[in-house]
Length: 336
Image (cartoon, rainbow, N blue to C red; front, side, top):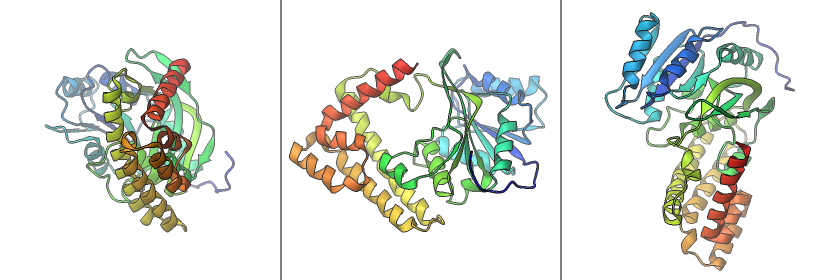
């Protein structure tokens, strides 16, 4: 990576691994074993289960007892499902370490994850978020493909707003503690906490990406992001698509608020862009009921803040939405 930042003299950071789980009895032991396998042991481990109704909590207890970790690892078990934002934020609140490595209960950390995370944060002391590389695996743990990020600093807040997402996937991310508090706690009622955290990283100077592989990231039918690729009727898919647009609208309002608390010189302009993008998503929810001329007018009105994909949705309506779904489905199928 080419960056002019000087190296920090400090040679060691404190690291907390925060594992959040919910109904992951099939995979939780592999996730816990991944923590145990670290060549650089974490200073803290917090396991936060969000009210699992299966045997996830029991299996965690058994693993803790079997490995003598009762006095070393912190267990936070909820009796009810409160949502991932509350669960994750609560887990972070129970840590004191400088670096937070988040884990899902169905992912597997490779033995080098803590060590290489620490090295990167020491090398780039001015950044709050890093993202390493890894492998996508299926339900059985088979490797579907490797995901290798370029060694670079990802910036570009305006581009993230136009795309509607930070582009950086949550796989193998780690963060400095302050990113969880600098813009307030995670909103309890807003899904996709990974996008919220990634955007915080972007507006805090950028995200350090590394080609070092550090995790096996599980993709399965129950993944929150898998709905796009499921076989479903046009009506069901379109209804889900519209609900997703409403979530995206709320994300943009939240991004605008975060920008107001950032130190970016052009934060007001970017915040206005985010609010305009939110307005666009609100209008796009009606795209299947608009005539071509009205869709064309919508595309022109929001031309400055929409992506090519958004333009396709506007100009071709529901046909464009389904064409985009089909393209992405076969792109992912072929790449697997």
